[in-house]
Length: 107
Image 1 (spheres, rainbow, N blue to C red):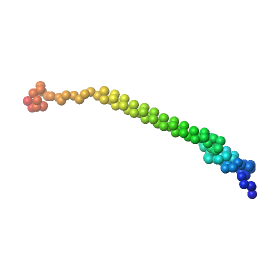
Image 2: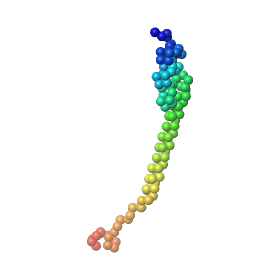
Image 3: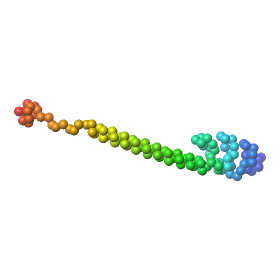
Image 4: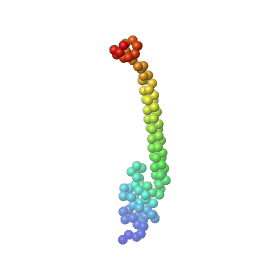
């Protein structure tokens, strides 16, 4: 049996509150998780950078979503205004046979 605070995977003395990461195969102080997006374990040394990465990704997503929605709204507005400008005004009612009223054959 190994003493307390000894990592059996690394075969080293580990710092307090450290855990062994199976992906990187080393002990990480205040280990949180392994992040595939940044390609490393999130722990004491890089937790603030990971939180900054998550927040910047969120802000970037909001900016892209807002810009896309604005562009789509402007495109729809321009298409609708172009469509309404290109349609002719409604035609006057058609009168048959010289204008005495009555319609076809009703003179």
